[in-house]
Picture 1 (cartoon, one colour):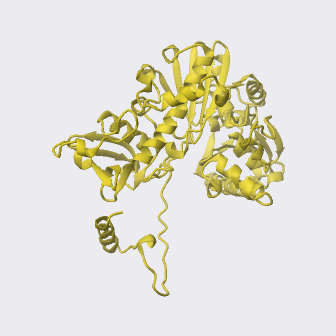
Picture 2 (tube, rainbow, N blue to C red; picture 1 turned 60 degrees about the horizontal axis):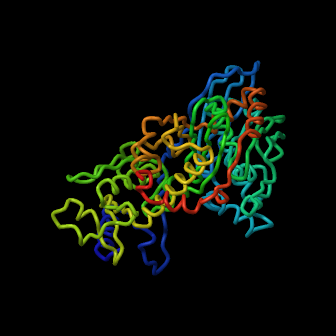
Picture 3 (cartoon, one colour; picture 1 turned 60 degrees about the vertical axis):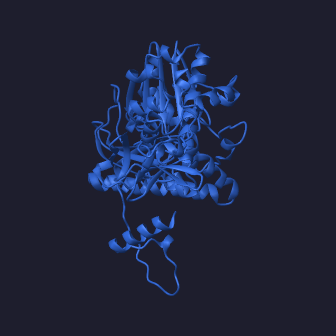
Length: 478
């Protein structure tokens, strides 16, 4: 940060009556007041729900839960009529042990005596708090809860059950279990009814978990004709291709950038987060969540700005910023680029100062390369191309808020599928809801998990070349 920027920041702090601790030199005893500015996080709780026959229940309630690496969603369901009585969501408390699954697995390695227990306690405590919240909202006694159904990725499922997840993080990446699990909820510390049953949906592999099995079932991929691509976009990108009766699937490490993390001005999708951007000759147009003053960039926002940087030529197809000295001062893009030493940065917003750096663009580029290479590898294995796809289904917290323009503009998907996109919402939680309401669906989903064919990308022929080519922002144009 330059001296000028520091001065402007100091003036703004004095005016607001707030001083940033990172900018304050302490020379004696002081009294500190923490500024508790909680922001509402935008978490998707609903999604596409196919028609199905529910089991008969005279009374009682159930809980459907989607445990994601970043967020957890919990719904209280009236078992008699299947209606949702209340829902809530929160950030996954395990984020304190790492933003992604591999970092959390590493924590188990580094703390062999306490790590597994700490990670389990974090998620169980979160779920207990959410159960209490939805029960209070719906005025339901938690003793009325008969069953809790959970969909989650494989690592989250292990950590929920207090099972050692370290084998997931090392070759040959074998989980301790893949089958559906049924046990008393109180066995892992969940506070519900005295006889509440916990049901954990089935999984396919270390990196295709119950959340993807749930999404595959909800979207009825096993019944689809033609070629359908299902994508759950988040910290990990899980992909399922339904083609000629086969269900091919793979997972790629998209990274936390697509959820607003590891970005210099990044934040999660909350009030004030920039979610859409338009660069014009008259200036930069921003859209924020709830139309609040900009405070950072969420996942959909960083993709939107990278799309615009590419469209306006501020970032080249290789992912590098253009050189500022190659522009004339009359060029509308000239004042949008600033130099930090030899590094070029894009000024997205001036007060507060929000920047998009070369590193930010690279993070998006890596995510783009991972996702596109995954699609390409699956399509190659099935002997088809992108133009052969009849439909592309987008699921997940991040994907639901991502317009086709950004997916295509950043080159994650080709223009040919722009009009074939269908957004299915939180298919993971919907799958947990469906198993909660039907014993038959439990059996069908367990059979479906056995049918899905997992493909390890690293072992795919020419994958390194596919990934390298997919990194280029114009790779879908070739």
